[in-house]
Length: 156
Image (tube, rainbow, N blue to C red; front, side, top):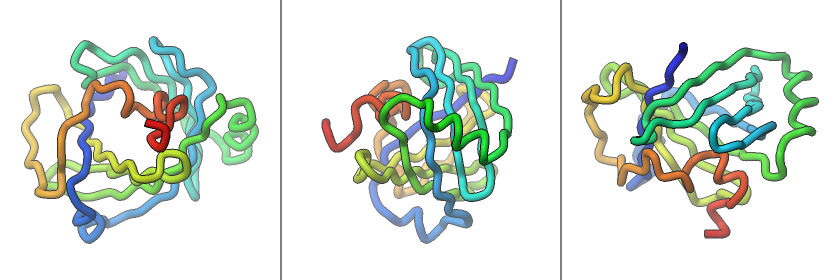
């Protein structure tokens, strides 16, 4: 069973942008945002995916994740069926030793929120924290994309 192990952090500064080697626009919607499972449709400039995620463990760090690439046309058709708020963001990729940080700068109703994520091979894996990394928000539900689609950052 594929398990995603991920930690999330707020950002202290825009310094990460200078270190980014890739920048991608992402639009995503949720076909289902039940707390025990989510089904997401994600569209980038070049590809699209459907993803199913299970409930997080007690720390909010690990959960089941299944993902499959689909056609852009299928993704656009599925987006019409998604729940109300579609998430839009620009994702920056930053190499940090053997890890990659994905930093999401949210747009639209979540403008002003920037979250960094790092995927790990196990929950106790050590990684170097860059100076621009702020407070950890792993496991805090209001920072989950599913929650941001229901209660956007600009309405906090």
